[in-house]
Image 1 (cartoon, helix red, strand yellow):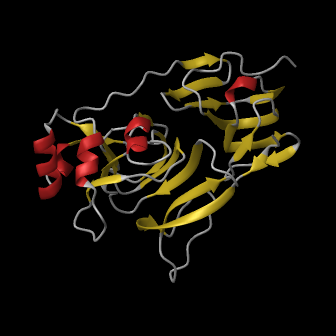
Image 2: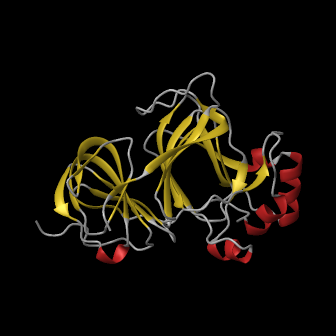
Amino acid sequence: MTSVRLTTRQIKKIWGRRELGLGFPAIAETDDPVGEIWFEAGAAPELLVKYLFTSAKLSVQVHPSDDDAQARGHARGKEECWLILDTEPDAAIGIGLRDTMSEHDLRGAALDGSIEEKLDWKPVSPGDIFYLPAGTIHAIGAGVTLLEVQQNIDLTYRLYDYGRPRELHVDDAVAVAHRGPWFAPSAPGEVGTGREILASGRAFTLERWTGAHASKLAMEDSGPVWLIPLDGAGSVDAQAIAPGEVWMADGTAQLDYSGTLLAAYARSSVVEGLFASR
């Protein structure tokens, strides 16, 4: 596999923004606001990387597990991870429920709108990281810019949408939801100089690399690696890479980078030997 720069696609959303920041160009007043920027490959790889930009609350929603999704005719479910990049004052996300609820009570709360108050809303700041196992009920508040890594499927069941004229999926959402507080899988944290495991769940692992790295990767059995530069500059397989881009590389790619770089791979166990000997 050759290292390739992924194609960007803007996704218009009613809760999006025109001033995106992070070096992305502003959206014209004559265009609809942009809520997401997706980074796509020609095929349909296991993971998808995107940026989100919110000016209003997203719906209260849930994503199914692989088993629940496949039972409904979909290729896979959706687990996701958020890295908060920028926030406005009082920005918050709702993740999990404050208390365990029955199916009956959850359905009722979705229909009367009280589900919004039953979410566990957490203030967020740049650098916060959240891994959401499938089935986690969640919502993102206004004034948040984040990077999301997820299983590559656009599959969302909405429980509540603040009266906006969009389809709800209450029965499916209640059926697949974890109806209690959020519990994230633990991550090892720092595992070596310039290498930190931010999140590691059933579907994928997300790492942060800092400092200078000039070596071939040693991830032959991990499939492709998504490289997400946040600051700094460098190259992969002699191709220049920079912040604002996402690259998909072979697990044995030659990396020469100085700065902060995220790396994601579709594997639930952390790769132990990350860099080959120089």
